[in-house]
Image 1 (spheres, rainbow, N blue to C red):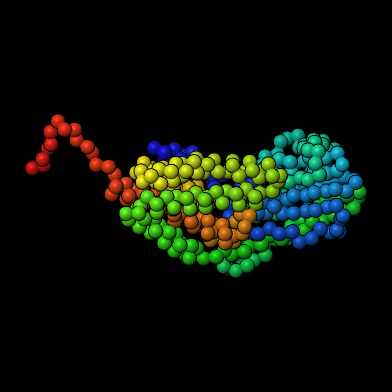
Image 2 (tube, rainbow, N blue to C red; image 1 turned 30 degrees about the vertical axis):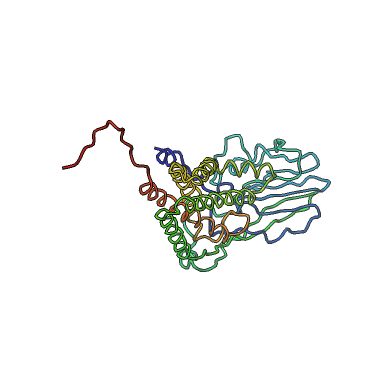
Length: 342
């Protein structure tokens, strides 16, 4: 029943993603800001999903949308967004959002204050791959590097045009087969642990490993996201709501297994099931991708994914085997008649 509820309520956002962007082979990078302007800092964040601009100059900096209309404004009074800019609505999701009838790129801007700060982060469709048919060069040779497009975002400051340029490239990922081999090996360790006399301490150690790996995964994904410390923390917790339950049950499993209680096997199974599904299988495509939203790099993320899948599978199978071998036998009362099979 628990498995059915998890599968029914799961969504793609349950995987470790940043701004809806999961592992990919498309890489977006900033090339130059022309001309260089003191006080202006531009960064591609969230795995090419968003742009982050910080402006500390004395005047207003205006960022333009897809039709050349004023879209964002940063200055001493804070950050403003043009309510009438079509980009305001197109950028609402990773796919193109619906533009309301009143939005008009040629209309006088209607500025709405977003914050009193000097930094703005927004999703920009110009800098990431929008999906659809795979570029012909990539389809012809997916194992090679390909330059897909050069993108440009225009800005002005005190009448001076500023061009922010970058590249969108295809960077092939590594082979997933070594990682699959590691997953099989880790699964075998868990199965062996459940069959030995040391099943309790062995499975306890494996539960601790997979819970720690999933926590590390959540922290690395949260730190990778752009924004304040509070935003990173909220993103970390909000993106791991299933895992938080698994971590708590992992503690229960460890405590009970330390006492060699078979009841700890039930908590171990649930912990492994949740982490294996949402910390591992949901991100399994990352084993063959070059770009993963993780603070400490692609290889570290792939190790965590493989551990989450392999150790979880091992704990799941090993716990079932350990229960079948070590479950307590039914106790008959003294006056209960014994039945002998013919």
